[in-house]
Image (cartoon, rainbow, N blue to C red):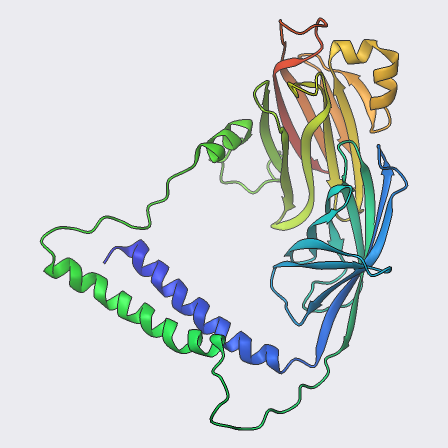
Length: 360
């Protein structure tokens, strides 16, 4: 039997066994976990927007979670979380738009204790802010014991735990038997085909020096090294990557459109590069402005609310630094759109090499 198929089926068996065990253990949990969340927008069109409320996780310690953010006034909004140890990422949908938050907690969701915080963007393009969170645990009220009757319905989770492993084992044994008896070979049903969207993403953000086996941060190597390419046909340019030191999450770095030259074409006239330090819960940003934006005082003043405005030029090096990490953006190539109404007002292509180092 194909090794990859066998590995896949074995993984399913382990997952189902873990899920069944998990179902039993969760039913005996004595507490449920909530997160008190405060969101503040400090800069941008939605400045001074503040939202406070609570998210009930129950006794669910999975790394990803979708639920409801309930404000103090009773309003409810969809929210989704992703946990990577102490690192937290969330997306909150409110009436004004979508808020993207990232940060770190003192303890993970399984502990359900401590505080945390981080930075956010949204709900409108150009909005920047921060958030604070606090884990709160409370007793899980004991469920009343149901009487034992013959008419009690069998739960779906019970059926899945019983019959799905049996089906997987049967499939595990049937595939090699079918290959022996069949007059032709089976096609591999698990072949992965990369979508055009993923290919474009890999072109726009490409990791460098992937073949070097020495540990990042040692032997003079940066913690992360990426080549970023912006092109005029990228209408939703917004890239980021995580930064790790000795396999521990220490922050993120990214680049996005700071200002569009035209709302119809959405071509970038200025780019924003940012660096987030997870240990210090701090984000620093700088604006790489095209010639037209940089020469106009009103546009430069508007962009200056997000960070220091710098005229983007090939050969220039832009540095962003926090207490723990430092990023250097080397401008390799800048091309302007020739057909723009205003000369040098819209980028056609920009290539930037970003290196992130640890501050020792």
